[in-house]
Amino acid sequence: MRITLKSFTQQVPPSFQFWIYPIIALSIFFIDHLCRYFTRFFTQLKPIEFRVPTHNAMVLTFQVNDKIAIHPGQYILIQCENISTLEWHPFYIIDYFCEPKKTVLTLAIGVRGDWTRELYDKVFDIKCHVEKLRRRKSSSNKGRRHRRSSMPKKMIFVMDGPFPNQAESILDAERIVLIGFEIGVAPYMSIFNYMM
Image (tube, rainbow, N blue to C red; front, top):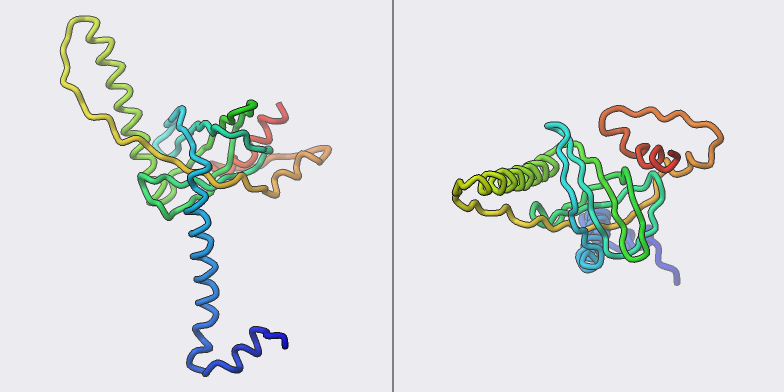
């Protein structure tokens, strides 16, 4: 006897039939989060460099201790444990460099919501702290003494991916035209870097 969703809903009382679909969707959602939670320790990212070119964008460079197969135009999901342990956000890889035992990748992130605003604030705090330390080091050589300031909390990033994108098929074309605006150029930057 084959059981289908239609035959199952006919056996369930009508008051419960409405709840079947949200329960299925929520169970898939929680299974996905459980899988991500238990596999997140295998793909930790080590921040190498933080750049803040404008007030609404940042460029983050990470090192992954494993060799990953990255192709131009792909994206990854990032989680910052300092902000939230449940939120994953997709970002395009704009540049990458693969070595035998490690991979270095760069992400361009536009400040568009609460999560990216909080990430920007934390990155900016770290950048300001590093600049203060540099100034103090140069002024301490001149004989001045300064109070110690506390270092901002270390940022912990976790990655899932990389995932393919429709932009990957561009490399098979004979001629291409790349059109992008603001942070929308991110998927094409890695393709452009790859071609050059």
